[in-house]
Image (tube, rainbow, N blue to C red):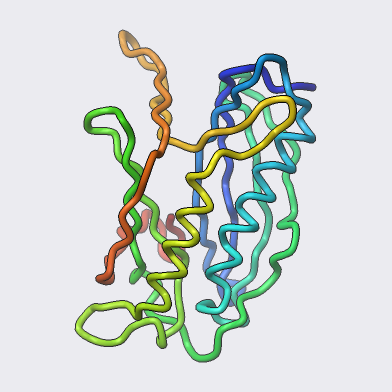
Amino acid sequence: MSVESNDVIRVTARMNHAGISAVQNQYHFQYRGVSPAGDAVVEAAVAGRLDAAYTFLIPYQETNFVYSDIQVWNVTQDRPMVTQSWPTLTLGTGNGAMLPLQVALLVLFRTPVARSQGRKYLPPSILATSIGGGLFSQAYIDAAFDWADELVASVPATPGSLAIGNYRYPAEGVPARFADWINFTVGQYARTQRRRVFGVGQ
C-alpha cells in the first residue's frame, strides 16, 4: 500500500520504565510529494527520525528504561501501518534512580497558526538531570534541544518528504488542519504532567 500526498500519519513512540510504567509520545507527520510513497518507506523514515532524536536522551534515562516499539497509523486513510521496532535504541544508559514519574522537561513547538502550539513532555529522566530549585542541568537541556531540533527537520521519504506538526481532527463545521512545527522552546524548569492513568503519559 502507499501513502498519498498530504496524508497525515500518526506515530506513537512507545517506551517502558522498569516493566511497570508505560511512556508514550505521540506525533503527527504529513507526507508531501508529487507522487505516493510506499508504506515501508514512510514507516522506516519516521522510525529512523525518532530513533535519531531519542538517541540524545538515553544518557539521561535509567538502564531499565526500555524502548518498546513505534506504532504507525495513516489517519487520512484510517488504516494501520506496520508497527516498527526502534532501529537502534533498546535501553537507557544513565546511572542512578529516576526523578518522580510525573516530573518532566517540557518542550513547546511553535506553528504559523494562531493558538496552535505543540507540547511534548520528555520521558522520565535520572536524578542527575535536576540541579535543584526545579532547574534541569545544562547538559540535559542541551540534549533536549538536540532532540527537538532533530524532530522539526524535514524527513526524507522518497519520492517526497514528511513534516511534523499539529493536526486538528475534523469535526462538524470544522475542517481538518495541519500546522507545521517551525521552531521550539526548551523549558529549564521541571514541569508536572497530569496523567490520565498512573504511570502513563506523554
